[in-house]
Length: 352
Ligand code: ADP
Ligand code: MG
Figure (tube, rainbow, N blue to C red):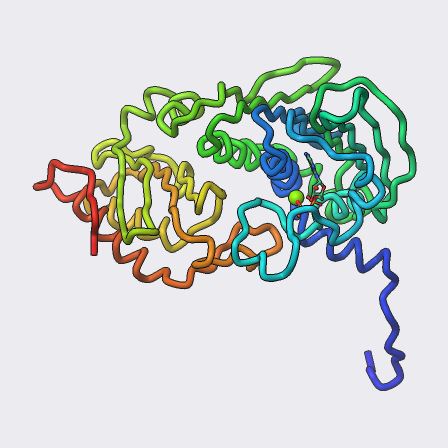
């Protein structure tokens, strides 16, 4: 196509919105992840994720968090509206999962969004319905405990290609979602997680259920099972006064024997993230001790919020560390000791 005869036009706002929304919400797990993170940001101690037909029909996240006050109803699902970022300098000291005000507006563009919510200041809850552009179109009173329920029906219904892919891959998407929910259930302290899936007429199965324990060990036992836990070794690594790593990793003779990275969970200050370099390092060092299996790893990196940036990818799974090399170096030394046959002590403190 020749460009010189073309006229440059602004893309229709609604179309831009849909295009951008599709980058924030990539699939079922990124959609549910945003809602779970909103519940955690709202201080919930109980989060229930309900799916209908593995999430293809609808999904719902029900929490007992602080709720949303009526003066926020109108702007709740508008693009780039957030209660979490007061000014731009805040970006460096973020303590919340969300901050871009994109999730609810994106979900409106891609599916049918309704919200039920009540704060401690209201005696009844309100049911809210939003249109594709995030405008509040209906509001009615309803009964509910304090907290919020967000329901999304027919995700991707207005993106034909994505919608077809979504239906075709729903079991795979569901598997990815369960693995992601496991990550939140492992790391969240004092938060009860339940996930149910309803199929057919009314067959409801519980896929995940935790009691909201305060310890990583208890969470591992609940989520991955006692057998798995007994094959793990604790890792405690102090890189500097403000940077440390703790968690669990497979004992050298007792890996998972499954696919590479199948059961590896990495967190930065409690935020589940992808850490391909750490995963590669863990696998490489484990291979020296046991070439037939892959290690399970659950590692939380505690670092100052100023030393990394989560604003790298739309789903915030990628992370940019300002001093990644020294973290990797320290972790390498620690794991070398763990997997060294001559070393019986698995816990390393203060690696310079
Ligand atoms: P962000 O999380 O980046 O602020 P979202 O689009 O995910 O953007 O949410 C917009 C706003 O809606 C949040 O800032 C918060 O004030 C409110 N909100 C969303 N979900 C909940 C929830 N479960 N409980 C309380 N408030 C919520
Ligand atoms: Mg959010």
